[in-house]
Image (tube, rainbow, N blue to C red; front, side, top):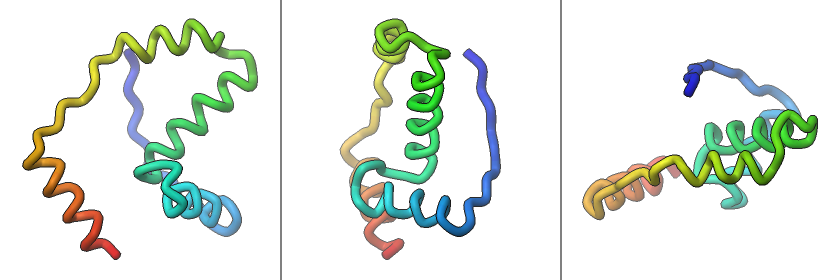
Amino acid sequence: MAESTLTLKFKGVEGDILDEMVQSGLFNSKSEAVRSSLVHYAIHLNLFERKKLWQKIQRIPPRKVSPKQLEKDLEAIENES
């Protein structure tokens, strides 16, 4: 599986949309919103069949987060505000 790391700067309307996607609770982070949007766009362009893509997603093991780490992460998010 390929991996890419990007640094993106969103200004104006695009930045506002990205902020709203996270602030509304639709996504947990801007990175998650961008990844999801990329997949949605690829599906829209018929680059992926939905069924095959979902099967591929389901094969990825879920991330394991300990209750202690989750508590730390939540505290960090709350402190950002």
